[in-house]
Length: 369
Image (tube, rainbow, N blue to C red):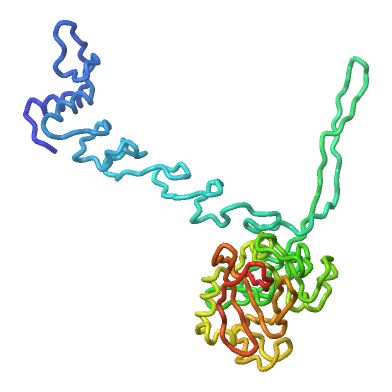
């Protein structure tokens, strides 16, 4: 606190002990009425004392030299002078410290158990039930008496519907089954990643091999040339190897369940890196033995439990390499008409990282978000 003259200090003490008011004079303005409002208040005295070197920049009646918060945008600038400035957070709480509430539910995101909406199955941002069963419908009525004609009128006011929901099993941990599009996929933990340990089977339509495009989604089943989904799904190749997708198809929503996605090229690299690098990871990813792979199936141990299968590929001229080769798309483009994929072969234990035309039909896997 600054030093003041005895007169100034006496004036401040007098004001604090016995507040007083001077009426403004028309001929001689009161020298203590700094803002000329006709009354001497604490602000006038603070202005007067400010001549001795201190200020009150936020006009809260407290000298800045002893005020720990002088920012008028703070929500506590005029409260306890020994408390630093606090600000209103996203929940409207002074000094609350919440940085985000993305779903607007009044719960801070860093403690919110679901940033989004719980579906009918209790899954955060889940896809909802696979089926809804109406157990009963009760029609609700009300009535009104018309006195003039001595008659009652009955009318419907609504319906009370009791429903039950059929929900997919909740995926709790990697290694559990995850249900998607009516099928239970096995999963496996590999390093920090959780992968499908079998190929995607999502088949919204089925295309003949003559259909080919870099931009239009096409879905193939190895050696099937029809367009009937049920017939394609009944083939042994579909049951064993799943679906072959061109790159536009693998980028369509719906191929992976909620909370999963087609891996990027860098996520494939993370997988092979964890398994020792591209030169040896293939053997650890391939299904062991010769049930599906051609001999010699070099280095195949499937120690990762990825269970890579030789689903072959599709192109505009036909189907190739079933039993000898398996290819899996990434979601990463490599050019305007090409994209990255990873490949396993029967004669080596490498993983080949390749960029090729988007019209090819390759297998797909999903990885956990």
